[in-house]
Image (cartoon, rainbow, N blue to C red; front, side):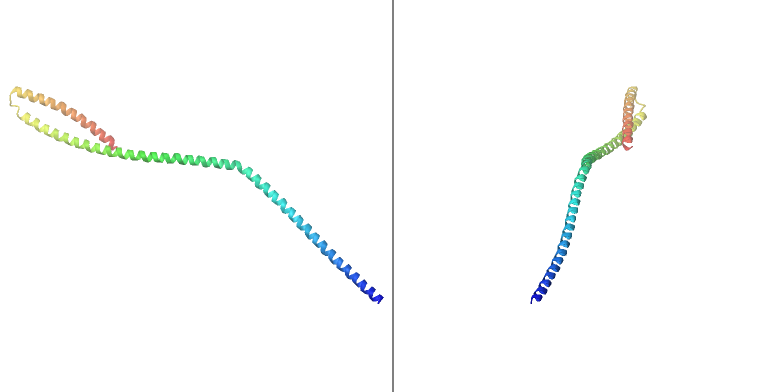
Length: 176
């Protein structure tokens, strides 16, 4: 019985030692894994700190570019507003020119009408002159009176011709 008890005690001791060794190996593996995890966490924390530093550095380096971009945007907005104002003024000027063209066209038509009326008056005056010239057999007083009327008519005709020439030049200038 004693030897059986010793044998059982030895087996129990051996089993306990085996269990202790097994537990020791598991503990060492667990500690190694924990050490690896701590190293990985430390590495990730370092990487995170580097990333935050890089982000802050990039923000600092981007600041002048942001300011430049803002200035460029403000200048572009200002240029756009100036161009819009210029386009608006040009459109307004164009409308004014259209109105002036219509007025000039009306004036040209009016001048053409006046020219035609003056031409009719001139033709009528020539007919009258011819009638007067055919009646030269009348008295000297009538002849002098007719000569005075003729002189007046010629002076008037010269004024009319000058006016016609001036109006024609205006028409030609406006047509050009």
